[in-house]
Amino acid sequence: MSETVRKPVLYSAVQPSGTLTIGNYIGALRNFVKLEKDYDCLFCMADLHALTVRQEPAALRRRTAELAALYIACGLDPEKNIIYAQSHVPMHAELAWILNCFTYMGELSRMTQFKDKSAKHADNINAGLFTYPVLMAADILLYQTDVVPVGADQKQHLEICRDIAERFNSVYGDVFKIPEPYIAKSAAARIMALNDPGSKMSKSGEPDSFISMADTPDDVRRKLRRAVTDSDGEIRVDPENKPGVTNLITICAAMSGKTAEEVCAELQGKGYGALKDATTEAVVSVLSPIQAEQKRILADKQYINDVLKNGSERASALAFRTLRKVYKKVGLYQL
Ligand code: ATP
Ligand code: LTN
Image (cartoon, rainbow, N blue to C red; front, side, top):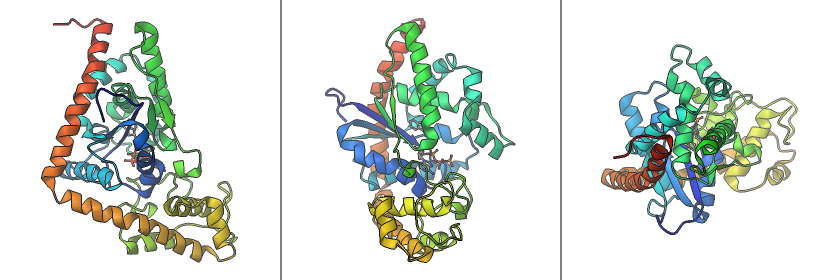
């Protein structure tokens, strides 16, 4: 990314809170790769966000490096794009504090992710979980972002980010660019759990609910074989009445580059076994080369460190400009 000649800015992040799933890949990473060439891009490992749920320290560190390697293995060039860890750029936490003072308790308590995660982690409903969207708004607004590619579950967080930015701008003038979400219109923006197609596939879900980006071909086959379907035997898209089958068609189409209609037409009358086999083949053919490349990249720790160091320096320079302006506008004493 050039810090002088500017294309529109694209920003996205993923939490290193587990091994990524094919839901993260289809809903987010795959789109990063598609959009990369038309934007100046920043891709962040949201390690501070991951702390809103208890993490094993060694695992969090390892997953942060793995996520950086995965970004690169998926095709994101660390020379052209800024790839960095959120905790390496202190301006995220600093801007989040300011924005906390421009965010209402009421709007935060309406966030469905907060409600879901509070129910899931009832023993640890911490303030970080509650203010999670504010830190996310800081991530995005620090870089004067134009577009934010995310899965459908993040739509509400993008809306609150825009509300906070507009609120701030209405008081202090045009400090923040108002970002646009980029969310695929199709079902691919929300891949569902294999064992419960009523809920989102999530990297912190039960083992049989997701396919991870690190799964072997045997894991993929086994998990897809067990995936919940229905009893009418017909391969067609019908999210209401056939959520399991629809989800498999969506995964198969996304991973094979076909449309859902093409997948249905090819497999018509062949039964769910054939759909599961075709999906397995499509998933494995995407995962295998990415896994090999990720492994190769991870073997060179120095390279990963260089990418992260370079990324954090470039991100810091951009973030500093916005933060300085914000501090000035709100009246913090300047030296
Ligand atoms: P966690 O289980 O730790 O909350 P997660 O799997 O929900 O994690 P995030 O790190 O919150 O993943 O999300 C990373 C990106 O992947 C976001 O853009 C998010 O919208 C997208 N994403 C997550 N799950 C899905 C899914 N099931 N389908 C499509 N996109 C998804
Ligand atoms: N909350 C996001 C991860 C995230 C993010 C961001 C995404 C943190 N900061 C900024 C886009 C832009 C999630 O996917 N759960």
